[in-house]
Length: 493
Image (cartoon, rainbow, N blue to C red):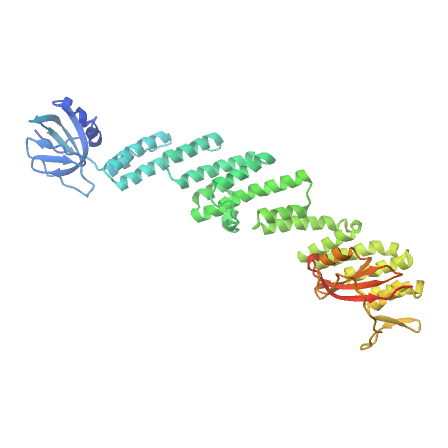
């Protein structure tokens, strides 16, 4: 007798398991069995299941199997294996309609506050096996969903525990939860490590390297960015990362990497006693997109230098002035130069002619103050009239002495021509580096800033013998100095 619509019998074997045990069928003849699965063919007294060639026969006409959808083909049969000569068939004694697999999945979904990850994994395994057997992509997607939900429960239970998170990360791989899920767990673990590594130089170094290797795009400065995403990320990194899309995650990978790298740079600088300029240089090299942070360190270094400007050497002052001008702090740079000069003025004035010569050089080189330089040189001439070095400086500045008084050379007036004797190897167009290699350091140098460039006069030779003045024009970079002209100076004998 065949029954239709009866409630399902417990302990049913899936058609997948039944087919898998095909070798046992001969020994199961006559044993009562309950089998469930998706039917493929039905006739008046014949039924076949999907992916099973065995005939399921009924002694009475089978009821019409109406379907709500193409998926609504699940049935359960009760009966026994029988022989028809050498051929086996399944004698159906009872048949009942079953919910389709998606409905079963929905009914089996774990609910409640006590749900465990294993509950989801059991459901995932069931959906995965059936989805694979029936080649059902929708059911396979449900299996993936169940695995992700199970990983989510496991991750929640592992929150705040580094080793547990690492275990869940590996489980996400084996359960096929997807790369995005696994990376989110790894990211959360990295955040825990970062908090634990604060202030530990070697630990931070290893963490930075692992983040660089483990998170795609972390080492690529093109992924650096700013804006609302990073503001939110700094406030709640785990939640923001979990919600980010693939492109945003590249930015967040870079943000995490640079935050560790920045801590490392600061710790290394503190340990080595590095200056703010060195920190800024390191940031620009290792984190080129961190323009603001590099500028902040440079600004702090310049502020510290301003407090000690009067004790600086000339070279230190030149570097500070150049840095401040490049940073848009030209007014402060000029004030620093004034303070530096004023701290030396009194002592140089006490040093007679030599001090005034030096003072004039400084005024020209640092301030391009021709008026004060000329006034100072005329004072020096008053202290020691007709001093040849003083006279040379004034002549270089376009002055002449007439009737015992110095004044500007009238325009258009030419000087007395003389034959120049230039050392071998010195020529117009050569670089300052080549000039230094050929002639060594000059005996005296005068520097004047002119229209964004620096004009320098390098004087070579003994005051009592042959002397030359080499005119160079250069930018702030000494490598760019170029010889423009070479002049013979008169002997001081």
